[in-house]
Image: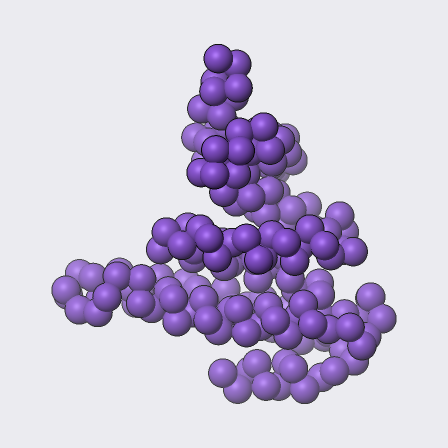
Length: 176
């Protein structure tokens, strides 16, 4: 991925983050569409395209996570949560939830974890809550999913419904 080399070469700057956001989002969507087309035609292994996309996204994540040279305002670390969210979407789709754990650890240990955009934090908490639910960690799942629900934009009815699909069963399990 030649974009990755260009992104990595700008050591003391993060001006390319919006470009990286766009490129990686498009890559995930493109891989998902390619996956669907291949499955319709009965070609390729399930999850193959998404796994390849995840490898590229993970390379970008490593560049962002390892950026220790720049001041915090110029750090590529600002891209970590966006990339984590894109990777979560892939890992949940291909049922490889164990790959979420290193991303969660990286974000939790980041000094920026409270400073990312509200939309990114809501998406992150939603996926971390779902992961906790699948791990039978119901109390943390309830905390993460409740955060996502209460901080989700009011006009995002579809997202609120998606959160409730997991939040309500978790709350019911905690009451019983």
